[in-house]
Length: 363
Image 1: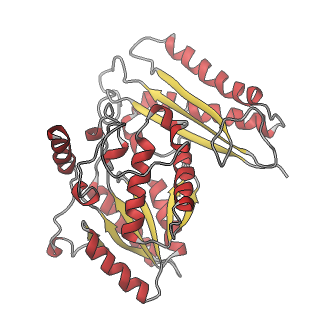
Image 2: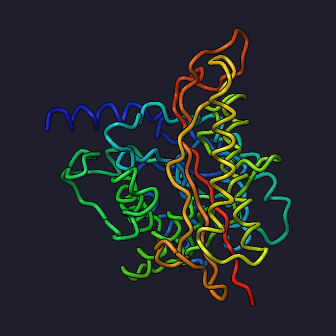
Image 3: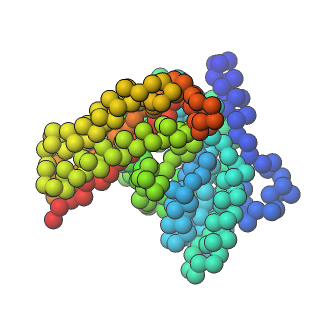
């Protein structure tokens, strides 16, 4: 218990949020809440005024993918709540919670700019509030546990949470489902918004909302990508130039598999062979280079799964389609060059890249 209590104290100290005193928040165009009761008071006021709320849950380090979800939420609701909370329970005991980027000032600046943009858009809602709770607020009784068998009040959605990402990160979706249940209960949003990039997360959250009769509508926004196809992620800041270029192998592999499906192939072997061929080729090329030139990686999985159950498919039903997804583990750089762009952490932080494409039904 002492170790867990120390973990909670350390976790709480990692959040660089502003003071909760009203005088320090007056320059924002939205309200900032760190506690539950004041936000619920605002929610009741909005409800009595027949206004609607869209919730966009985030862990901060905002990028264009987050902003696109907020724009979608603003187009469908009068008011938008953005949560910023780096959730400790979705990090395993061997995952470095402290290394997750925390960029409060930059995040607030982006949200202020977006609110100015939304003010100029006819019929659009605006960001009304940020929920930036402490770990003590979100986990008020027991310290948050990252142990697989740790104590706590958790939400588990199985068997979905045990597949794909869950196989490598056994507490991840327990943490995601738990914190989302808490956020949904706190905010009482009419609609909640998630990105397609985290496709397994969207399936888990939809199942949770259905199974627990949660009164909210789950909306999924498309994956936002860089010009070269790399899916936007808060963790991309750790890549640097070398690993970023090699990390594109995942997107290229999924596109090759998608091309096989679109050409009429339906069997697992035919579709995934195209993807596996790309990753094997890129890895072989990297292994032939020197330590100062290469960026090594490990393929965690490339999956062809049912869109509802995430069960692996031997053959795709063309009337239903499938989810094509994958994960790469980018290793730390072995040696770096003077002046090289190695990303945040100087290339020493391992980076997990995930991506997916939806194989659409064929009429």
